Amino acid sequence: MKKIFFTFILCFLLITTSKALEINSKYAVLYNLNDTSIVYELNKDEKTSIASLTKIMTTIVALENISDYNTKVSITKEMLNGLEEQGAATIGIKEGQILTYNDLLYGVLLASGADAARALAISISQSEENFVQKMNEKALNLDLKSTHFTGTVGLDDENHYSTVNEVAKILMYALKNPKFKEIFTTDSYTFSDNTFTVKSTMRQTGKAYHLDTKNILGGKTGFTSQAGRCLASIAYDKQNDINYLLVTTNASKVPDHLYDALNIYDYYFNNYKFQTLINTNDILVTLKTKYSKTKEIQIKSPKKITKYLNNNYSKDDLQIVYQGEKIITPTMAKGTQLGTVNIKYKDEIIKKLPITLPKKIKYSFLGFLMAYKFIIILAIIIIILIIIWQKKKVKIK
Image (cartoon, rainbow, N blue to C red):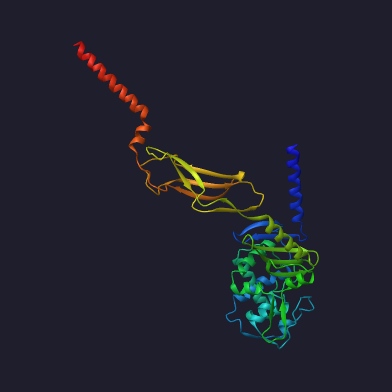
């Protein structure tokens, strides 16, 4: 009966988990940024169209080629040509308008403006083609083997592709740049010439569909017919102090990409955290001593050891495997390395710790006597017998 009940509970948990992670997107990857580990994936290494997620690379390459964000840029006809005809989303920049690099950067990343992206590229590299070359060089520098760009905007092209995992790597790299992170996590920005205010496309989608996006710190949306609805975002689990990064592509409709993000974040916020496997001062090894009043020495953990796990994890899967000296002798000085301990969870080594002698073991003559009491007693008996034999020998003479 107990076995049947346990099987029922296990099936229930598996079904619940499956439903919790049932998403609309065809490609997805979720990173725990605290330890840069992948905690959820769906076709993460398959090539896919990435639409305006392209502009993450456009923005970081631009940032690395701009010395002054307040530099003014005169918008030319070349910067705007053909964008509307190609179906690219624009923010309404006009020919002859004077904007700053700062304006264009916010226009690209926040509002996904193709016109801002083209203006950045041409003003920095004299042509979009030259700028795209810089983007592909950056992809090579980041060791992205499944990423190639043909434009700054992200329009569908068979030679313009990436994977959700490599987009995630681009975003992780970009977020190290303080200016990029500032823009990525901003909700709205007013242009320096006060012509208009651009707003986060992710926030606008959430607002339109009455979705609570407060735990999502920032995001970049994207859409083309091939890429579907895309979203690259970061979120913070305040309760467990964990930062996440999620990239999804190929959701079929609005707001499925945002539903997916909220669903995935919610599941991991509520079901995962860094579990404490070993606390500071927990006993790792107990070793016997030799020739000492102190019978044994307990070696304690110098630090807390954690692992990112489901809340239903079992400590039965934790192993502490010690290899080294089995007995401590008085000849061993304080700090002597005795061996190592492997902290393992389900046969995975989480941490390897050196085991050292925490204090000098004092020699005890009594302890020595106790250790060899049988031999000493035997020796005394032998000596006594020899003495008796000697006395008898004298009397006989």
